[in-house]
Length: 226
Ligand code: NI
Image (tube, rainbow, N blue to C red):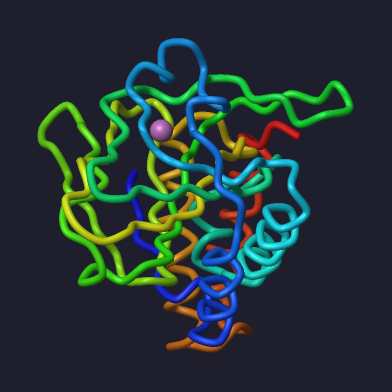
């Protein structure tokens, strides 16, 4: 399941992020790619352990904790601190699949179930630079508004098309979901969205809302791996 989550960052947060990133010390992105991915990668990245990357990353995670749509779709168990990349004219990140396992530090590992890209520049600030995601049926070409986030399966082949003009800034991260199976996760998301809608229409105390809400929580209990 691919999901567009609008307005993860407010316009005020966005301008603060843009100001900070304009003065940041970027390094060659190949330093942080796996061996196979490094060959496809031609971009700039903030060192993940730099104080700026950590501060901005924490701000994104805090915003997502309060984002009901993100929490419902991802059911996050572990989240890697967001990283930041920059593609300038002539740069791209060719077709690749993200690493299956990431190290969180302290010996903890994260299985990447979902990948997330948060767009920090508006679509009209750069030419090219689409995020292309290949599914079995079609290729999705994605360029979202600044502040919007795309959640997509980490199993997908994907690429950042060459930027031909301007600069493309994004944050990206991976997460391990409490529900490993993508189909189970999609069913839970649809059920949760329906329960939210019925709650608005009928009220939280309505017998059917209570029953469906109970069903949702009991399915999470069946399928969650925590
Ligand atoms: Ni990737």
